[in-house]
Image (cartoon, rainbow, N blue to C red; front, side, top):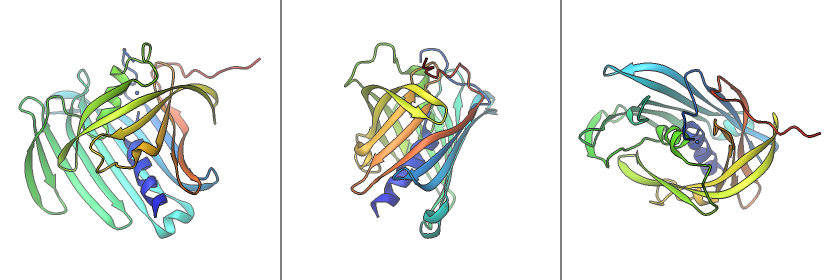
Length: 260
């Protein structure tokens, strides 16, 4: 079913998500999202948490992303996903990535250690009990670190409609060209009020793992936080979307439009 596929894509994006020339986030940042089908049927939830940690003697951010189905959808397609990344506080380059998922019985339990100096990815597939090594491109990102990297490096002040930003991302034993296309600005109504937002179209150039992402639209706050406010997938019948429901620990003020 197409709706199932879009639900999985949105959960993946949320567990990746979050886009500033100065640091846009810090330890203690936490987001919660609600997912719905056609704006009324609850489909699931997702959270993102930023923590402090150390790995190989380096100070890192440890981001944990979780996504799960709820309500009626859970009864015929249960999803419980957990993604983790450990990335350098200065360069935002990842050192470790964890993917532990159960999507309707399809499971994976993978840990990847990145050697950013020698451009290697050490893949430990715990489910299959196999270990492999892959060559990567310089400054490779993982699924989660990609969007924290963009939050700190995407120049939104000078961006123009149609501009694209590309990042090399390692996923499922391959390097993919992740791309975002800027669509413009829009004022959207959220649970917190009206927000000035930047609109993007996220998709992967390789067109294999995320071959349907061209149907997605992403809204992020047009402030120093660059937080994901909404993701929407247009379907043949109805739509699937995720909306920011709660947050805490923002580094910068969250701008809400006040109407007189």
